[in-house]
Length: 310
Image (cartoon, rainbow, N blue to C red; front, side, top):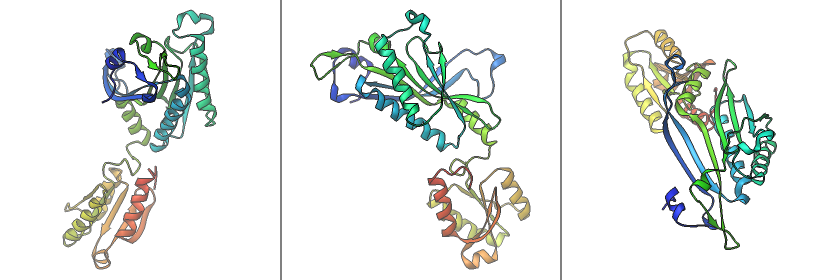
């Protein structure tokens, strides 16, 4: 059974049970003024990919390191190679305004910096920008036109373990208060989708494209072959459609290009006879006739590797 906050209030966790990790997609609300609402990018109700990690002081560096690896995996997977990192710390002249002990803040800041330094990530130190309950790392991605957007956060919270009276039994047999880490990867899902759409101008990487390939039969007599090809591609997990409209082939190709479908597969007499497809890449143009198996192997590799542009 997973632990809940109430469980941890009334029972001591054992050292072997830590770290305890909770993750959820939680919807939150904020009454934004109507003048600042902006499509998916600024809304009044949004969903966050929230997680909270409870661990010992000795486990903190590993947990932050793992969280940072997950952040970088997300950035790489979606093809974002430009981002800035900010390390928000407390105002040293107003230490009394912050929760947590001197030891807590040193552990937290050292652990966050170590995770960045070990990966060669540059960051900006934001003095006085930490919230009162702990320091944090903010990752802001830079979109296609140079705008920064808040994405991932790794945050310490020195208040909640105390407020919930959380503790665990250490190797010394005594009760100890765990450290709590908060992390979000995409942040607001709605805002992330808005940024993703704008960043790629709707021309998503092949692994993300709603339709990954469209089969275009030259004439009605090629419809049956096109459907057979569609079934084979769909069986391999590829999102594919057949354009059977009574339109000219050039019109269908332009329509697929405008819809930003990564691949167009033209089939006619030659392809029916050879069991092949004539491949047209959205970016590179005509790639010539290929056996369907060769095309499938190639596209499956692009999808598996999350290739941004084939």
